[in-house]
Length: 379
Ligand SMILES: Cc1ncc(COP(=O)(O)O)c(C=O)c1O
Image (cartoon, rainbow, N blue to C red; front, side):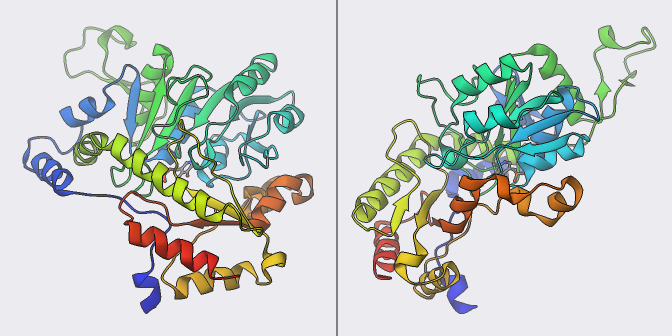
């Protein structure tokens, strides 16, 4: 237990005195929720801030208006929320195998996974690197599917064309998460970006019980300024002003956070490049706002199991994690959707080899050296 407390985690928030001051100011203000900080945090046209990234996924799937009998495709190597969002709306989740180089959904496998009843595709920008959106958008257009980007890992990343993830150039909507391990945090928090005003209005209603306050859109008119209507079922997925105040303060530091993450990744890559049993998933890429640093380890060649690998690093004060167990292996998905793991050669291979090493901006140079020598010392 002692070593767990001292160990470097795989990810952690960076909170400074400015963040604390911003939150205290919000606490002393007149609005703890539904106030000006949320509006300021949303900033951009057609951004809807919500309680967390999972809530964002839930309402984007609800907003595209799918029905029972429809299916959606996502990557098996992602956090559960990417697929759970489909299940919440009664949509059958399907998975497409990954590209082993990027660990993102493979466009070729995606084409094969799509069925006649598939209406939505949820690519996940794993570890911060955008999926091949141009090809995915073309596949979606051919099959008349909506694209929803799960950019929980990719706040601040750019596509190969230089556009920022979140500009929805290739999708109907893009979601972000501001969980503490992400590029910036609001404690819990999420947001949806879209360029479509219809989706924007719908998302705002779904975030707050389905309530409509615009008199022009209500069925009954002229009843009085108090009148509101609920025409569809929504949720309470609102972000608080306390969260938004923290998010605004964190946004001021996003470039610094990303620069530090990139520097750590470059140091790791340089240190591991000649080690035959280790293969970093993160390549040096000026467009990537690295969320995770994942390595693929040839445990047979190294001569120890993954559990022993993780235990030995933990004993040296280095915490690690596995991102992720393929979703189709989860008992819930196996039981309810009968998906066979056999069809996912690359995801299974990846899962057998992956380990995430610590990556967060507050890591010191000493921390980085500690991780590198702990890993290289295993041979
Ligand atoms: C890829 C991905 N999608 C969605 C989510 C859900 O975000 P949240 O934890 O904010 O609900 C996460 C969170 O870890 C994630 O990693």
